[in-house]
Image (cartoon, rainbow, N blue to C red):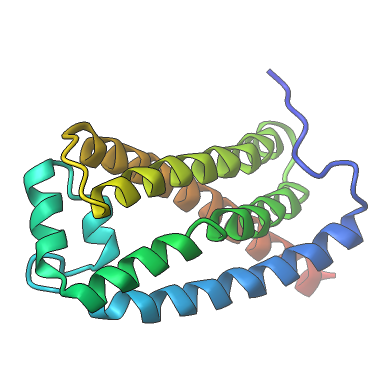
Length: 182
């Protein structure tokens, strides 16, 4: 099945400019999130918020929350708040990068790029579902399905994003090699 990539109606030069703007914004938000996450690293949550995302069960999620002091819980809430902006920013950055990379391929590999570019938006939607589940847990919910929901959303989100980033890097390397040979 053939699918058109997102942003196909935007001229390539403008897509590239937007891609670099959103890559810069995504890196800035990543830097900010990393700073927010640092105090969330505990013996129970060695990866901070990522440990919380992958808790997988209610007992582990509650143990992680209980390992955070009041200040850390505020940071976690603030980090989740920022993470409601982050999917739009990284979605634009990665999706635009994948669309740019797909131009270096032909046939099925180019079509794979279109699918991966849309997959980034599925990852962003999964990120929102995950964030809502984590927010509810942080607010004291004892719904045992929430940690499982967050886990699976995070797992598929990261899988889709890693595949898309690898594709974008592959296409970027191909573009650089073509330019150096020209």
